[in-house]
Image (cartoon, rainbow, N blue to C red; front, side):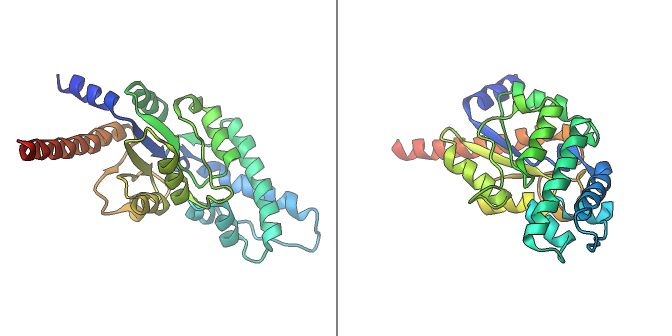
Length: 252
């Protein structure tokens, strides 16, 4: 009976789930070093005098979650902005090709859990600092895009990061009643805090629990996410019912 009531409540509300992608849904860890290494080799072929240190997997992983421009500034500070942008384009192309070959890893339970959330009428959004080509390669390769709602917003133009992405969703989605940010890095937590929305931290991501330690809602596997969503939504409904009760008492 409780489950039936819960599903009815969810169906009446337009609840959006803003998902980070890299480290939350997909792990590119085992292809990063190769993609960047090949990108550097391809780039320096055009300039025999240029030498670039190939970053390690650990160095690249430490930057994941940041916008692409910031990642390449951290990894290649000696290059000009134009050169960094060119190198970033090459490395991203490499990653996209590898993703389409199903290299990298779709995290355990992702497809089944997202399909379950879709059946329960939650609306899912992409909230990533990753570039469009990279993120959409993941969603399309693993047949996930069909579960996500439009618009697909990325850090492009006036939107410079994930916080701006979430802010844009809040401003344009007229039917939005509640939105929850779900991710593994500090940038995900920051997007939630600055937009004043609930946050579910994924301790199985690139940084473990370090960057999200102390948060109220933490999951250790993707499969735990629906249970936390129910808890958050339930508390929201309780708060709304209390307000209605108080208003009714005043009217009487």
